[in-house]
Image (cartoon, rainbow, N blue to C red; front, side, top):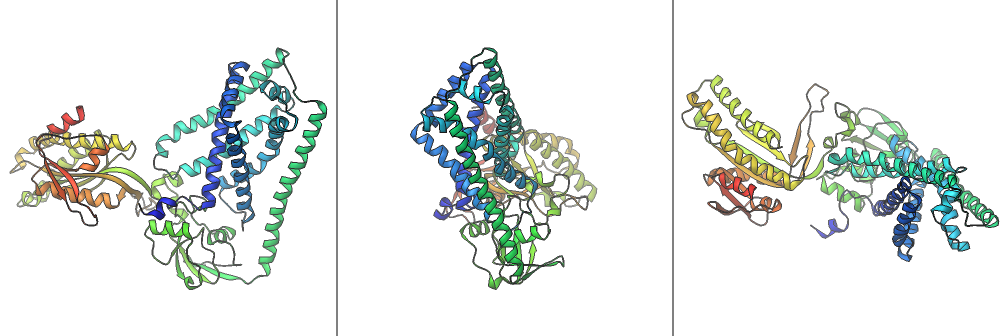
Length: 561
């Protein structure tokens, strides 16, 4: 991997976004275990104290305190900074929900921090669960429960819209959603159950004096005023900016659908589109991670600034031409003619925006090519009906074996079939399934040849190529509006190599040619009567080690080992 990519991987967002994300993840980890601690209240107050003591060994150390409160200040500060730079309040519903929740959290959180950590630091008070429950129940029960839900929902929204770009997230979305419902439910019932039990046992205890409490409440009020004064200043700044923009020079943005709008320079193209109510795709919310806001600049590119580091990485990764830019990063300074390359309408269909493959993802899969040997000569002299009949029986059998082993048919090209494994499974198990498919093909071909004995001059034989690695998975072209939707397909060097290995299989007169890389990745070691050779593949610097197999019994023994 080139050094620049290692330091700043494409699709990771800007440095500011990465710092905000890391700070948010630290806070979410703290909240997760804090809520689990609350859940122990369903058992007993002693269990809560035990969990709190365990948690204190991490978060109440000098390092833990600096990390936690540093993350809190950083995350909140960068979020306010992002809000202050907004040029429009038009945004997706999920983004608006996260913003509103983020602004509501400090109102209750400030008090929670000051009556716990503030009391410990300023008055050297011992703040434990007995004190906290005594303070909160019953007067502040609704406020505390609301804080718990606000923090959790805010964090879960952020996690979901970050993780949904990950290839493995779709497989775990249901259990993670169940966990997202279970944790706050247990936390709420836990702290409320413990508080009620404490009252019934008359075990309440306040570890600060009334005077100390009054002083803390005064400090809380001052900090709240300061925070929301800052929010008010941000809103005022936004209004002032809008007023100034009204009198500034206007530029014209023309879209290929014929619509032309005028806007003041400053906002990004994505913000301009949103301000004027023009649909413009942005799956990641304008964070330069997904590239779905990519736009073709048809006119006016001469006056544009060069792409920044983050945008340049993403554009390079997608192989974009020089006149393609990310609308979330591009700030027009003169008249332009543009064409968004992804239309939001294309996402509407059977799967909608929830189909991550509509926009393309990177994922490790095993790619298999299967082709009939000598089918051209085999079909000579046969009627079209006979040729189609033979092909259908062969294809039906092969597709059934692929499906039986958890594979997915990418496409059927006459007598050739391309299949994908590990699309919905871990890569290692997907490779083993692909190897099992090659083994099962022997028996299936025997059945096919038996069924077609009266139609064939010679038994059908296949050549298989198998390779694996990171590919781009996506739905290319048809969006289903015309009644036909495109299926999932794989793109990239791995596909080309697998196709080349199918040819190697024919050259060696073997049934299958499998790359050593994919076998090592699955922890498989094939020994016995096999042919090993190095294959030069166009576009690769080093030759590829390949194992050619004629007897599939070796594969069965390997899988059983």
